[in-house]
Length: 320
Image (cartoon, rainbow, N blue to C red; front, side, top):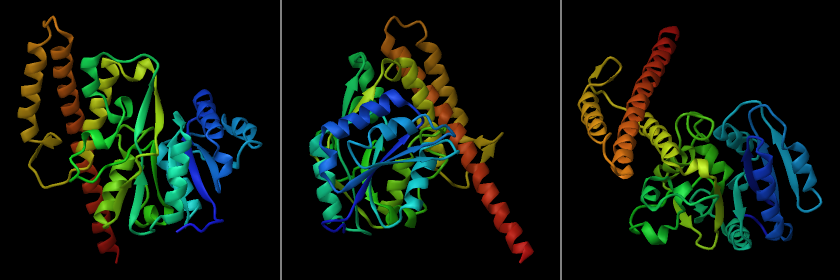
């Protein structure tokens, strides 16, 4: 538990998107972040330092520090922070969110009462669209592009999975489960680094605590809520699905044998809808096909990873 006078952290991972980062930082200042016993840490990854001067420009408005790491990837940036700041409470934000005063207050209260080793936290996500997508497309978009208010869509029985743009935990708890997996998340083909990590926390027996007042708004440009982008995202989601799966299935040419039938079914459906006058059935068939192709790719990569692990163990046994 964070004591009355102890500091906790807001962690913003960025790849030098200074316009968006400035918007996020200004929203924190406007929301009164300086009133709270916390420090903002901007972690820029990918070898650039574009955000350095921008971060310094906010030093008069709030307590802020800057980190730069050469490796690319949001998971890498998150790990750089947590392993450098053990024993602290951290609220993770993306560099394209708009923060509300209520959100800072909610996480400050959580930091004071947080049960290290037993709880982690997250809040809802609103959307700031550059241009709203067509209504029929919204169900196909990920939660980060359509918004997330779990009281409206969850059954109350399944533990919520918080979005990476708005959640918090003790760094020691994240370190205890191995930190963020670098093969997932922004900067990688597979998505969902926070999802994978939160599943590990659940397996460890920890409890997700939803903070309904901790609302932030995610900026979604026109280019990230289009049919083309949604199909590309479906492929990446499929890769994630495959990477998370392991097993001793029968493989043919690098892929599980049963997947070839599923591929043919989806390819056939895609071909049948090419002449449809309606955009939705054409899109849905493409969406399902590309998700499945990503799933195959992820399953192939998962098998290779298992083989590498097994080979490493075998070599270790032989050398010992």
